[in-house]
Image (cartoon, rainbow, N blue to C red):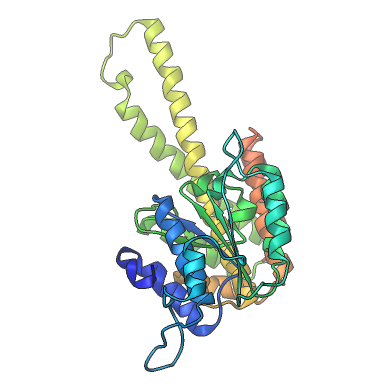
Length: 344
């Protein structure tokens, strides 16, 4: 297969080909979609394109943006028999990817290629990395060997560690809804990012950001409460037995809290992805690498004031904040501490 065989994934194909054209491939990609077989096929195709022995050339530029799908290298990659294209899948009884598997992979990736141009590591079902394996893989993602690329494939990106997600360029395949937001949410994120980029390094500026965040969360909680209360039997039946009413009230309260936690996590994850864009801007990788290109100006303004290390520390702060919130710590306190640690 070559890129032409993915007519439903032209957004992904065009981004990859633009990166090939500019010679600016990311060191790690996250392919997220609903069909793992399709993600594997795209991973093979990209591996073939960057290692093809007889690539088709563009008539106007003479550049290679695809594979011939016929040379010895392409055939080996297609059959998963190429020594420089490495595959890892869940294999243990518990269907996880273990630390031993990742150590073997990392050792192989750091060796010089046998005869390919690029070393390619493909992690199939990356959401099945156990915590030890994921943490071991972080160093390779942070300091990748030259001429190597990691491709992480998943149908459940929400199950992956944020430290892994934030170090990969995520490509959403058609049918994968993650990272999609309506216009009202994007307007709020624009407001938040603009406030962050305004240069307010003072304590007052940080508390202004906290106020923007808490106000949004308050609106989210009110909307969830209204929607779920309206659907509850409590609103339809006034003469319920007291014990039944008490049980329904408890169930409604639990449902509201569960949905609020989910939406709060989604909101904070969106903020973290924007902070990832700031990190990308410190690396000067180009706008095609951004999650929110429409918010690029704010990300660029913040990036000018930060080092790459500081931008990465912001991502770690957001991850820690999410973990604290998941442990039932007081919400306002966790958010206040997190916002005060962020560097803008």
